[in-house]
Image (cartoon, rainbow, N blue to C red; front, top):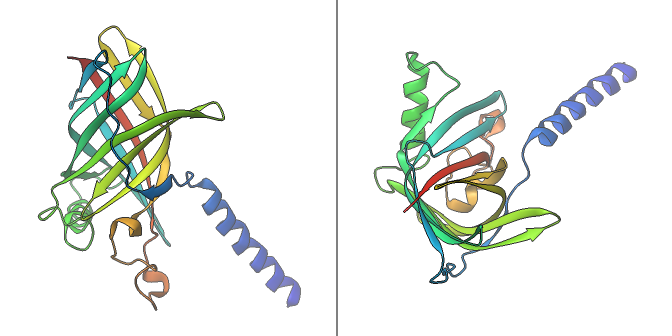
Length: 217
């Protein structure tokens, strides 16, 4: 009996460890900082909203959901091939679910829940915003820092990105990273705000990946 218990315990521990290991690293999160200002010599690129998007993934005990959010507008100022400043606006009403077929009832139900006051409260906060505060190289990676505003909260996050230039086009792509939604007052089903949720909780971690395509102004 003891041997069986140990085997079960080891299996649970392995699954838990694997689940944690599979999640992207959480972005370093600090208080909001002053926005970066570009030099007069910087070149301006405007976001191509048809090609720019943010991918998301949310977790719960029984699985996960994936989706996208559209970038409504954005500007990136570049000097000598490096980002100096910029910002982009996220259209929260564009939240879409991609792991449930669009024609299924569950897709509309989940989308409605995410846009409701339980989560992102899109009626009150129709937009989120990312504003560049700095960029530096750390351990060989380009780390982009910026103020992320969602709902009524703003925090500074640092995320690893790659940028590339192709004529008048610029692409900025982040690695997949994690944010803790509780830091932006997204409370529904969060153990950070509620006790006795049992297995009805929803993980605070949200994975994001930014794909920003911009064209020279």
